[in-house]
Each structure stands twice: as C-alpha cells, then as structure tokens.
Amino acid sequence: MQALGVPGMGIAVVEAGKLAWSRGFGLADVERGTPVDDGTLFEVASMSKPPFAYAVLQLVDRGKLSLDEPLVHYRRPDYLGDSPWIDRITIRDVLRHSTGLPNWRKDPAHEKLVPAVAPGTRIDYSGEAFVWLQLVVEAVTGESLDRTMRRLLFDPAGMRDSSYGWDAEIAARSVRGYGIPGDADAAKPPQGLREAWDAAMPVAGQWGKPLSSWRYADAERALPLAQTHAKSGVVNWPVDILADAAASLHCTVRDYARFMALMVHAEPAPWELRPQTRAAMLRKQIDVPGRWTDKGLGWNLEATPRGPVFYHSGSNAGIFKSFAIGDAARHRALVVSTNATNGNLLYRRVVRAATGLDLLAFDV
Image 1 (cartoon, rainbow, N blue to C red):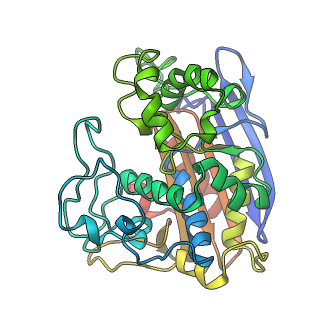
Image 2: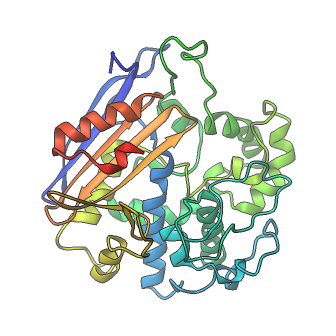
C-alpha cells in the first residue's frame, strides 16, 4: 500500500459459501485520519452491476420480466435516438454486454443514445445499457432502484451497509479517493459521484425526499436545481444525480462478500435465484470468436488452470478501484476494495497471493 500510494483497503473472504473473514487496512480519509474498518463504505463502481443483475433475474424468475423481451416493450426513454437496432435490444443483451450501446455518451445532455452495431453481434461494455434496464425495472416495480434492491436483495441477504443512493451518513462513512503520489492533485482529486450528489442534497432536503427514493423523473425535475449548486461540468444529465445501477453502489467489503456468498454457496434459500438461473449467470452467454474471457449474465468468466472463475472489477473517477472474484465449484470468493488510482495494481497482487491465479483480465 505504501509503495503504490494506496491509503486504504478492505478485504473480505468467502469460504464454504459463507463470509469467513474480513479486515480493513490503512485510512479511509487521510486528512481526518479515519481508519478503514468493518463499517467503512467503499464506492465499488462497476461492481454495482452484478448485484443489480441478480435482482433483475429475481424479477425474471418471478415472471415480472422476460430475459429475451426487448427493453422498448417495457420502457423507451426519450433520450434514445433513431436506429432499427434499438427495438431489438433485450434484457439478456444488457446483462451480457451485447447491446451495441456505448459505455457512456460524451455529451448526454445533447447526444442521443444509439447502438453502434446490431445487438447480439459483439461485446460492447455499456453502463448506459444498465441505466436503461434500471428504468425498465422502475416501470415494472414502481419503485426507486434502492427500494427494489433493498426488498429483493439487501434485506434478505443481510446487506445492511449497502446503498446505491447517498445521504449524510453514507457520505460520512465513505472513503475518500486519492491519486498517484507525486501528482499535483493526488491528495485532493475530483471525487466524482460525491460531488454530483452533494449538489443534489439541498434539493432532496428541500423536497423532504431522500436521494435513495428518487426515480428518473425526480432526477429530471431536480436537474436544473442541482446544477445551481454544482461545479461546472459535474451535473450534466439526470443520471448524474440518480442512484445508478451501473456504478453507484456504496457498501462494506463484508456486504459485498455476502452477495458473493449467494453466488457460490450450495443450498440457496427460497428467496434467492433458482439454481438454474444462478447457473445461467455463470455460463457463457455469447460466442465471440477470438475472446479470451467470456460474458455470463452480469459477470465476466475466465477459464484458469484451476477451473472456471467469475469476476468483476470497478473503477470510478480513476480513484476508486475494486475487484471481486468467485469460484463456484469450490464455494470460495474474494473481495478487495481500495481508495486510490493505483488500487488496481494492489488488488491484483492481493488476488495473485490469495488465489494463486494470474488472470488474463489483469493484462488489459
């Protein structure tokens, strides 16, 4: 950690399908000297996607959604552009990243969202696709993202320290992010989501409606008000101030390990995914010649000398870096979260040391 300039890190281990061990290292906030402990919240960035995928598949299991139904049959956001491919994008395409949509538009306030290729033909990692699917879930449940996640996953799994939203308590418990030592702004780089949501907090207070209960229409209505509190360029479109299925999960490493346990334990509870649905999450969902890793539903898959593993990484604002890896056959998993630009270099060392695996994913 010292060599790489990573102030804080949390690690949690799943063995025999259960949370077995966790520990915090270093500082969550350097200026305040706040240590990382079991209650520290990390911004896990794109690792937000697999828990959301799990909840989506719960809705599929319950007949509320259909995996191969086009998203437009549930909801067509007004920021979509004109393309014959849009009507063909399915929930399965979103979860396996085959929508053809970009990760994020450069100018979402003025640029329409359109796919670059026909869905189901190649892998295009897309946060935009997950946001669209989030709006589909809103339409089906009538709830905010956080309310749905709490009902379907967080509460039954005992993930009491998890939220896609933001409030004063989450802000106080969340790590600060740091850059590369020696860089001019390493100690105080832009904090990404924190800055956007801090601009929306006065609106939430004025309305008496916490950010975790906002739906897309609330964020649309709040946008001009939040922009008056924000630095230039921080709040550009409603999703900047909306709990975001693609990137905004804040949780402890222990909580994320509890989620990983659902993916690897042997005997699921009645509220969990059906065994065949969970198996589908970890099964190759699209054949793209020449790829050295595969896509399941919400997960990346890689064959290793010790058997198949599933994994996901997370990187927000270039300063929040996390990684989770699971071995379903051995009922094991590992979660590592950090709060610095070089956190990815650190978590790779942790994964190699703890598992003996040197993933091809680490070479990207």
